[in-house]
Amino acid sequence: MELRQLRYFTVLAAELSFTRAARKLHVSQPPLSLQIANLEKELGARLFERTSRSVQLSDAGKAFLPHALAVLERLDEARSHVGLVANGLEGRIKLGLSGSHFLGPLPRFIQRFGASRPGVEIVLQEMAPVDHLRALREGRVDLSVSRSSLSDGQLASQLLWRDPVVAALPRGHRLARRKTLRLAELRGEPFVALRRESSAFAQRLFDACLEAGFVPRTVQQVIELPALVHLVAAGLGVALVPASLARLRAGEVATCRLGAHMPAGDVYALRRIDEPQPAVREFMQALLAWAGAAQSREELR
Image (cartoon, rainbow, N blue to C red; front, top):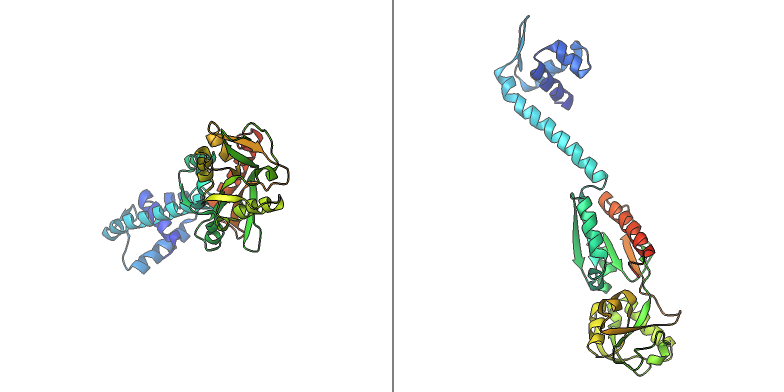
């Protein structure tokens, strides 16, 4: 049974005239008659009662008509759905995020993107920074937002926005009024720090201290960046944090710029290098465009 036969049958059932049906289908009458005859042969029943004056649906034709219409309707729905998916208007995006990225402007972008594409489901998966690369490689997430860049045979990264690292100090700290510091001036200070095994970014901050000539005197260790700012605000120590996070507690935390050789807390979008599904591709393109525009307006600095 061919879809063409179903279309011919439903049009003839509506027109009840081979002449009008052929005209509507843009075919001549012989091919139309042949396809109807083949369909009747396959079904083993006459679908139409034909006389010299009229064409009427038989009882078998009346029984078959709703099924034929349903098949064609499902085909139209499938065609429409495939078109939406192919154009990134339907689909599912699994996005890996760490705690710090829930606090900035990124959730607002996600909301706007979702509102503009109601057929796209965005699933946010919170994970420790160290887990992002593994989750991408294993296919548990489609995209990841991270402060570490990486390009290898499986993964690629693209810069979203710049985020310099600053020294975060309690408001009452002796250096709190300074605008700039050399990292070496924090030698001997109690540090609240990221666990070095928690991310490549944490290791880079530790290495920066070594290059400045000291091992940080760490008094508290955490996994996520937002916790550092809260501990500094509570007076438990000093920390090295991205400037965007320090601003979240600007009334309780003083910040000092550091030298040009400090590692940055820049934010990257990570993805697998294989061809992404259309919804993921559209999300990535929109994310890059939004981040570039927001950076130029200084919303992300």
